[in-house]
Image (cartoon, rainbow over all chains, first blue to last red; front, side, top):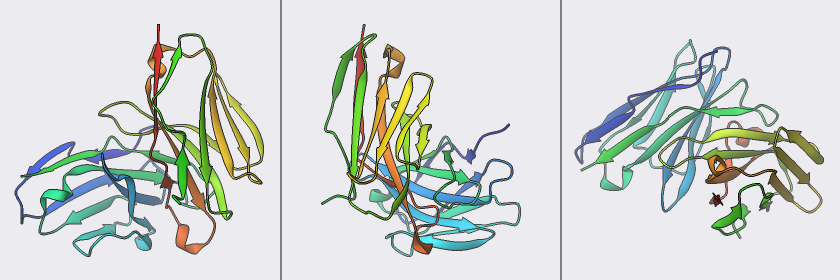
Length: 114
Length: 114
């Protein structure tokens, strides 16, 4: 059974650019959540999608957005990149995103903004 | 007060010993609890998931949940050097605003020395 797949694994971007990250969840999982991990802030929740609808959103500026497709694959976009956006971006796949379901992480995308 | 707090590390134990990791949470509405292991430079790996009071065992790992005390712990028996990693405690709350949202502690670094 394939796990959660994130692409690309590494990205280097310049300030002001935009970036799109992709996440393919485990087959049968319809919930995809996105997290940002930095040494100072730890793991912080960005947003969650289920059946192409954003159901939940964390406290990040509007430059961070996402979407989900009918096959449950999800993309996350960051516009007007800032140096502080350098982080490991992780997506988590869950069958339903409700409390009694497990969540599994992908390998992450390491974004460096220069 | 942080929503999820873990015992400050780093924690160092000899090979073969029991490692005990602790986590407290502030929201009594928390429904489910996760323990993830994260090796340096890698993504979090789910090792235990618990939502009922009491103990849950899986191989060398035992999770213990006490909702009255708002406390969840992870015991690792017969610790091995390969268990050396950061252990992350995460909770998910009830309610519609919690879909897919794991709230993480800051992590505890465990080192198992030969």
